[in-house]
Image (cartoon, rainbow, N blue to C red):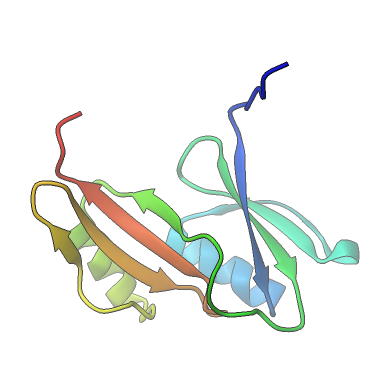
Length: 124
């Protein structure tokens, strides 16, 4: 029997302050809180991308380095960078440009979890 992947993806991340992280993801990423279960230190937020959620797990400390980097495509990467700048979100330098392929921008949540924004230049 083949693996049958459905239409929902949850990106699970560790955070040290659940309330502050929910606020950050709502303000910065325009996520909407779906539910929160304090007894197990877990919540899920819907991203603006249909079928993609972010799950936050309360942990004592977040280990830096390694792991997956979640990449979200944006309509306008310059406008997205301006949004991050206005909210003083830590970024990994300027927008990277791979001519004819993609523009990329890395940024971090308050616990150092890495995300990336992309704007493709390739014809689809």
